[in-house]
Image (cartoon, rainbow, N blue to C red; front, side):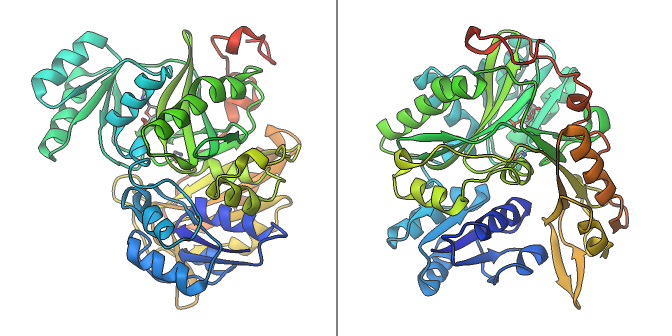
Length: 435
Ligand code: AMP
Ligand code: GLY
């Protein structure tokens, strides 16, 4: 099988790497890719957000499957165009991708499908915003309704800051969703779907803030680990039964079947599991950690989803090890990331046992790898437990030289110390690890 992967980031590097390990995948191409991806497979310098350019490339290469990584091409209708040319696509069409592109739409679907989520109100004026903020009280949660790469959400105790965020969204011509605050640990669960059937992957946890102890502004994600030893037994099944399957059914009922990965961003609160958000694609950097453990060949799985055949998929198999991914970001990320800095020590960093390096914002300049984006790369380590995986990941990232580079020192640290507690047990089952 020949596969084309669309996207420029670490998630796509992880997908390409996993596809190359699938014995049924004979050839992988990527567009546009990055310096790390170009080391593995041919890359094509097209605009990956352009439906026509992607379709032309897929047809020209004669691929059997197109896998779309990021949200922007999905929202732009790239999947619809490629599907229209008769090529199987892993990734939802524009209508179904609204589950991520519009938070207000996602809330409507959740309400219709009876999916547990935060109470929310849509506001289009400052007066409406103020009323909603006061209705829910502090901490305040204000979300830009459109795509914002994980950076359009403000969670704050400060009512003025919350209102100011809403105001800036209105000034940009948008609307906001204001929500009740959800306490409790967060979980990312990726659920593959062919439009009818669902297959969950292993849960992961992501680290959204730029600095240790969850301080500083939100980013696209600074690290991840999987699986979650502390998660209640039955959590994955609960998410399938109460969130993923009802959502997939509701999308199908509306005539906009969702084919791809439904990323369920969840909070395990004192009142039970709640959806924080849906995304219409794999998470970045959770994918880097999750795919490092997946032993079922990825190509077959994604093709089955694209062709509506996930009901024939076999039980997934996973490595016993734990995976930890630590993101190295450039100077000034997430504000105005500086690019064009040389990245040194990559070869040495890759020699650490059970470690691999996945590029995100990198490119080749005069034969040298330089930074080209906010999140530059992720170091992914497998270990017998979280402690061992963390040790290896941090040994490796410490060998990489990037001027002004930033990474968090506490990825998976709380979990490794056994400090994460879940304030409820899923489906009334006892937690695997006592809270
Ligand atoms: P989102 O883009 O909706 O995933 O939000 C980004 C981050 O903001 C989430 O990962 C949470 O850490 C935080 N967040 C979003 N919604 C809520 C909420 N209702 N309560 C508490 N934290 C939230
Ligand atoms: N890691 C968060 C995201 O992919 O949106």
